Image 1 (tube, rainbow over the protein chains, first blue to last red):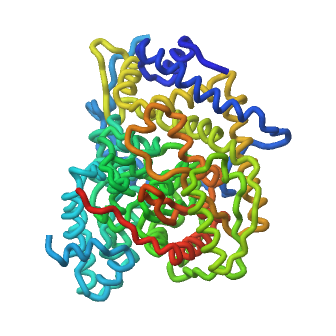
Image 2 (cartoon, each protein chain N blue to C red):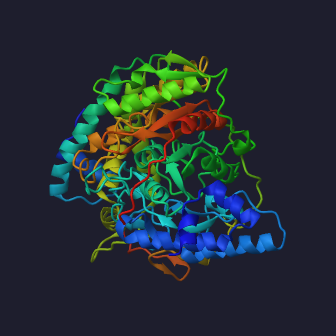
Image 3 (cartoon, rainbow over the protein chains, first blue to last red):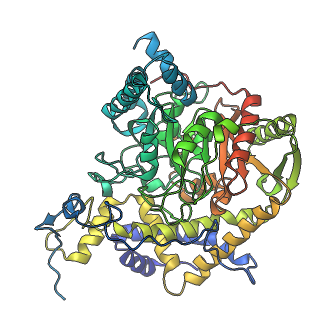
Length: 100
Length: 498
């Protein structure tokens, strides 16, 4: 499979990365080079093979259902959460106006 | 710099810990010596994104006070280290070497770094790396290339320190840090260690908590130590490892006493030599180093056994589907809303802001991987690429498990070449990816793997040998590494030009 300019533009849009037409043109051969190389995986016989889900067998755990058990994620730290926001205002994350 | 200070920067983790404990010198003297060495080298090597001499001194003062008060000292007491800038450090800017995180000051500390501070280590600074740990030469950092302290004989050309932990490898080999943290997703501890003549171990997936480490590919990312020798790696890994309820893939197992159990006597052990790793056109010096390693392990008492890892050639292409797929998902969080960079063009809406922010903040290699990941996960292609890659991953893991029915540890080169020059590989992403051909299979299988220095190539540059072990058998890997280290007699070091 290979990509063309329309596909790269579509992927970039799905990935929310703004790209110029010149960048798209440069990416098409780069991505096609990589995709052509990974094509070789298709020659591996994977009949009856399950896709890997956990590299080291491990048991899924649930944490205790207790509010505030971990002071960091337990809530009540609004200012710390907002401290790194580019536009933290009035106790909220600020974003441009959304009208749909 | 006084003579004493010079002598202190010659010391590794064990020597510093023991010297501080016995009172031969103080932790404050050690921290000051490395602070000076790191500051002097910064302009030439660019190993650090940010130096934090005050943090190193503060931790050292605590250790000296604890010793004066007769309190027990930690495993890393008095050892100042470099912290790869992928670990969140409370109150100290953490960037992942990307503009998109510039100015991000975590209000929390990563589990691994906290464990190191609790063990008495101090922070010399935040080390440079490939942006989001994506790269094999440290040339994708938004904060400039790291320059390897090594040079080819008779040349002043700038060489790559390897990647992604290139700041870590440069700092340790230049003796401006006795040890450093690294992270390894597809070779990012082992390849830079090999390029700079130092040791580094990636433990079994789950040994070190991923909590507070900026995520690249979560099913592969593992932290580990980089230091001058095997013993120092064992000490530091003990301090870094351990169960963490905050990481859902953390192993709930006790941390073995790796250092005191070190044993280079390999009698009764079997070492596997994977024939698929001996590739056509293999570098003659790399092949020779591998043969030397086989002879050393035989000398240590091990039996050498040829093994098959039939799916080896598919590991790298599988990795370059799985890792970008996970990265595209993990890096979706950088949206210009919650932290880091925001690019809000005049009159832009929310979606435009996301796209502009991510275009301005991510470097070219990061964008490339996000796009590949987005493509292979997109509707209609998911099964052909991602599911197929995860099935191949199962087969790669199965190859290793079959081999470990017979052998205890596997010996292979760490990288197909010695360090290359800066700029030599950047124009061809595929050629750069191929540098991780020997490192990636163990990552895909979650196995412990280590690089130790083996010798020099014809240009006078270090070569590394890789040891791959069974799940949870870091001890077997460290022991075989020690057997090589004690026979290789590797004492080469970069001549100081910085």
